[in-house]
Structures are given as structure tokens and as C-alpha cells.
Image 1 (spheres, rainbow, N blue to C red):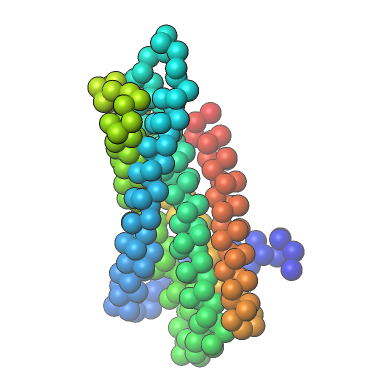
Image 2: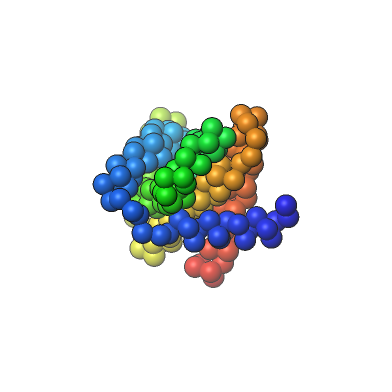
Length: 246
């Protein structure tokens, strides 16, 4: 099947996903379950990576600002901008594409190959709506919070790196954080987080829902889902940056 057919099937899938849930009590329980599986269980890995990425950015910036003419507050400024513009929304999303994307594809794919999805269809349930919509809502509403946490911990990690290595002073770092604050950049990061969250929830769901075969094919579909989710995130990152910042 060529790429155009995949794109067409993907948007056809979305048409079935965004139909009104048939039983709100069942949908509510599924939503809270997805918030735990896709959101809460991802807090640890996002926090860990963001903290150390912020520290690495601060250390590398300090090591490259050896000239006494260049003010040291640029270290805090560069760390803040790097975390808000790129590392928190994009880098965290690529990490989540691997962790969450493989989980979504494998769980839905397993239901497909074990004929559980067929059973839902026989009972008259919109399986796409039942399986995918809670994932989309959970990701779209929770992932901006993860990105905000990543921004904070990345900047804090940069401060900790400076305190431990003595490459720069805390006063200069904090001055750089406070310098030239632009609230729109936070909106930009939030927009990217919402768009990437939608991709992370839907692309792996597509690969899992339409998988054919057995356990081996589910594993291959999980790998393809992670790859294509990451590719789509990188492409959308380019276009969103052009659209929102140019």
C-alpha cells in the first residue's frame, strides 16, 4: 500500500474516532485509565531527561563562552530559550513517541490479532471511538503539562549544573532567565505540545488498529509506528516553527 492510501485511511479513521461516545460512563472510565497510562506514567522519564538536558545545555553554553567580553547571563538566557523553543516540546515528544507510541500500537494491535476488536464491532460498538478517542483527549490535555514540567526542570537543571561545577554564578544565571521574557514563546511551546500529542495518540493507533497477522506483525507495527510518529513530529516541528515564529 502506498503512502497516499495510508494517509487516506488515516483520515478515514479520524472520521470514525470523532463521533459521539455511546456510553459516557464507559468513556469516562476509559479516559481516566488513559490519563494514567499515557500521562502519569510518563512523568518520570520526562522529568529525568529534561533535568539533565537543561544541565548539559548550561554546561556546554558556559564552556563556549570563554571570552570575558561575552556576559555570563547569556548562559541562563540560552538555556531558557532552548528549553522553551525546542528541547521541552520537541525532544520530550520524540521520547514519548517511543515510549507511548509503542505501547498504544502493541495494545491495540494485540486486540486486533486476538479478535477483540471484531467482538466490539459485533456488539455494535464503534471500536475506533472507544479505543482511540480517550487516548487523544488524555494526550492533548495532559502533555502540555508535561512540557511545562520539562521547561521548569530543564531550567532548574541548568542552575544545578552551575552550582555543582562553578562554571557560572547563580546570580548571572537567574539574571539571564529573567532577561527578555516573551510570553508568546510559552504559547508557542503549548501549541507544539498539543499538536505533537495528537500525533502521538493517533499515528500509533492507526498502525495498531490496521495490523494484520500475529504477534510478529504487532512488533513490526510498533516499530513502524515509532518511526513514523517521530518523522511526523520532526516535519510538523519545522512547519510550526516557520508558521509561528517567522
